[in-house]
Amino acid sequence: TLAAEDVTDGRVDVAAEKIFEQARTRLPALFGTILLVILFFVAGIVGVALIGTLLNGTLGAVLAAVVVVIAVVAGVRLSVLAPVVVLERKSGRAAIDRAWEISRGHWFLLLRVVLLSAIIVGVPARIVGSIISAAIPGFIGNYIGSALPDAFAAPLPALALVLTYFRLTQAAAPSVEPPLLPPLATHEPPESA
Image (cartoon, rainbow, N blue to C red; front, side, top):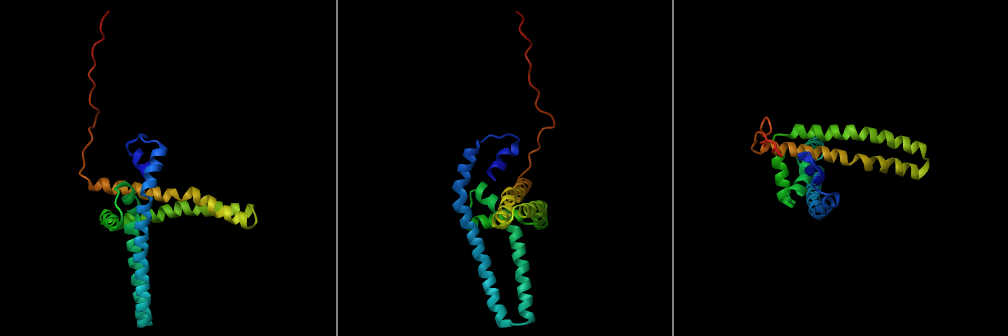
């Protein structure tokens, strides 16, 4: 996330060590915020399960379907949570509120980014993993066939979401039109010797 922010102006201004150090300082806030979201989802699922067992039958199934829809909507709306925590230095409820605010009106865009990046990255990773697993028999082949493609593929959907975060936050910011042409430099005539 921080590396993507660094290169948005077309230049690499910050050393990799500095980016890793800044990211490391945000990990506790990121994990805490994600844990808070997980707790919200688990509480919702447990609540629905309890109510569903009491309602039994069709009404319970309808309630479960509604909760699944709500969970998908909330999950997509919160897909920009990591960039909010890392770049805006928010955590907990403030980060959740900010991610919700950024994604307002952009649910279908975020859904497309999440699904397309998962498909574009996930399908080739599964194919490569299957080839590795077939080439190396046993537990080691299965482990390498699963872990290696995922290690290379996992950052790409996250990068897609970070770039979408930039697009959404820049769209909300007041636009400043860049000049059509760069300012003209003044040239001094050469001094005669």
